[in-house]
Image (cartoon, rainbow, N blue to C red; front, top):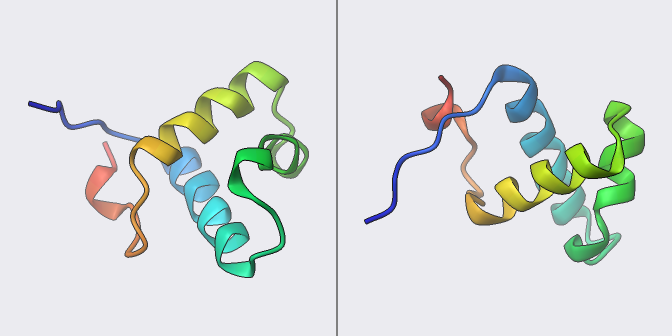
Length: 68
């Protein structure tokens, strides 16, 4: 059984950005880390962690249900 995760407002903003990037079709999402890092001034580790969290919890309909 999967445990329910929660995200912060800033993580939701990043998740929404990643959804928009995905919808644009501009890149393969496995290569999204540098875009995320640049957009939100994150280091490599943090941007990788956020990208992985987004991939595990991808939802086309948004992330309001995950907010803490």
